[in-house]
Image 1 (cartoon, rainbow, N blue to C red):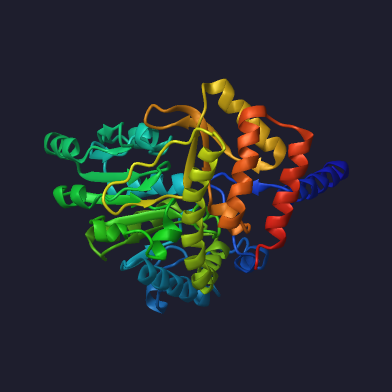
Image 2: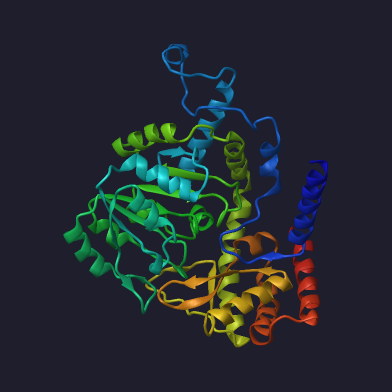
Length: 408
C-alpha cells in the first residue's frame, strides 16, 4: 500500500507539471480563481448541512437535524440570494453537483412519467446525454426542428410542432454552438414551462454581453459553474419566480441530494468578488474566438463559418473541419503532443468529425488577442504537417509566455 500511495503522489505531481506546460482549448474546461478554492481544502469536507432555515420548533418536528450548522445554513442562503439577484431571478439552489446530475434531478422534480418535453437534439448542439436521461425518466420527447444550413433551430417549424405535440416543458440545452441563439420568439409562442441550460454561456450572461434567458421568456435557468465560468465544479438552478413549480422542484431536490458539499457553495459565494475580472474575461474570450476564426482561415485551416441572425453574438467556441474522422483524430493527437488540449468530436448539424476549440480556459490562463496569430500559426502547421520537435519547442515557449504574463 505504501508503494501505491507514493506512486499516486508522484503521478499527481506529474499531472500538475503537465498542466503547467499545456493550454486548455477544450470549451468545457476552465481554470478557477485560486482564492475561491480555499474552502475546498478546509474543515467543511464531510459536514452535512441543510439550506433550509428552521426555528427550534421546526427543528423539533423534523425527522433529522445536525447540530452546530445554523451559520452555514444562513451563509448558504445569502449566497443563494446574491446569485439570484445577479441572474435576475428570485430563487436559487446550489445543491446540485454537476450538469447531468442537475438535468436528472430537475426533471424528476418538475415532471411526472408521461409528460411531454420539446427539446434541443444532439444534432443541433444539444447535450449527448440529454435524450437518454429524458427517456429513462419516462418522458415523451420531441426534437426541435433544425435549420441545417444556418446552424440553428427552425423557429417556424418549431411552432408547428409545438401546436401538434402540446409539450409540458420546453428544454434548451446547447452544448455546441457558434452563435448565442435568441429564443425569444419561440418562448413567446410556447405556453409551457421553459428551461434553459446556460453552462456554455454563463460568464457572458452575467456580464450582460448575452441576453438573459429570463428576458427571452424562460422560467428557469440551470447551469454548471466550471465550464464557461471559472468557478467550482458545481451546478445550480435559478427560478425567475418563486412559483408553484419552484416550490415543487425545491422539495424534490431535498429528496434527491443528501450531502450538499457546502465547500463548493462557499466557493460560488467567493467567486462574486471577481465580478470586475469576469467582465474583462467575457469580452476577451469572445474577441479571442472570433479573431481565432480569422487567423486560422488565414493559415489555411478549414473553420466552420458562424451564421448570424439580427444582433446575435458569437460564442467562445470554434469548429475546425477535417477531411474525415482519421484526419480529425490525427490533428487532435498532434495538438495534444504539442501541449494544446482540444476536443475531438463528431460536430453537430451533420458537419462530420472535427475539433471544437473553446476560449474559456485559455483566456483564464492568459490568452489575449495579441497571442491569437501565433496560436493560429501553430495550429495551422499541425493541421498541414502534424507534430514535429521544432513545432513542439515553439509551442512550449508560446504557452510559457502566455502563462507568465497571465495577470498583466
